[in-house]
Image (cartoon, rainbow, N blue to C red):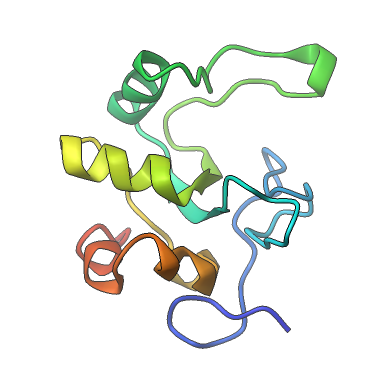
Length: 119
């Protein structure tokens, strides 16, 4: 069973929109997930703009991939490195620790994640 950054069973991040590398609602990961989509975050307008400025447009719908586009308030499994980059730039969206996979700790610290915990 997958664990979260707190060492407890990994919880679902979002089913509306349906997220996760395997699109099962959880930020599970595996060898095929080279981007480590392990951080469950509630995206903000500032983060979406930041991500788009870095070449990853998460707000524009891509129907050919079944992707409706994200809007502020949506929860999404983000690449740990992109979340870390956003945190360093001051644009990190809040994190749901119970739904963030423990492998995120290979890239970001638990302290940083807790600092940005959704409250």
